[in-house]
Length: 338
Image (cartoon, rainbow, N blue to C red; front, side):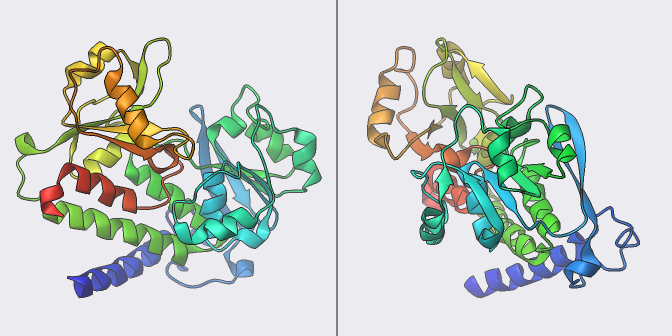
């Protein structure tokens, strides 16, 4: 089985590398697709243009050369660039020191960075003092109301390209497109192709193991964010990346919406077999205690006893940097198939 997986991975990487070069590249140099699957030097590769979306508005970002001075906003984005081997070009990292990397092998490199905690605002003067040519952030970094730094049009005016790693994000496929685009931006298509191939291997394994399960017999589950907002709770449905993980892990998301605030009564009516409880700061919150408090919440007493806690960064869009989350969900929903 392991040999077959290695063979599948090798084939997947070859196929993806052969295709990835022309999916998003819009530059004159590559528009004839003659360079697909060919290793290009930076001088032959650029310019490339990619798109990113904030609040439904699409922004085209053209890179005339490989980014050389990068700012990351959110710890997940710093980890993402470290995983691509791009840590040497990060000149500013807005992240908290308490973050635990999803890839445990990257923790020391993450901790070695001098980081600036993310507050309500990141002063534009501080950003410009770092002389960046690229900012990797979330939609909240660049939203039209000002965001943490400012909107993309304004930052483009300073010669700074931007890219968002959490919007749009309605499915695992969207997430993989983000990984692919990061590879395009930095001319690291082989690395992104390998990451995507690793996801594909896991997805194929799960599909194989659950192939003989009838739809009516599949485990139903929901993702609930720990903590109420005016008596309601965020539930992540099948039309949202976090909720789509349930589907990709072989289950059925009991809620077919997006990321919505639902009352306890509505949540109970979904009647899931499993609840994945998303905890914001699992370093400060004991998972068992969080589960006990959730079960003790008025209105939830009649719900399933099968509640499993996961860290925010493992489940929320933009932070899913490790495909092993699929394995964890699968093991919870189908322990007999592990």
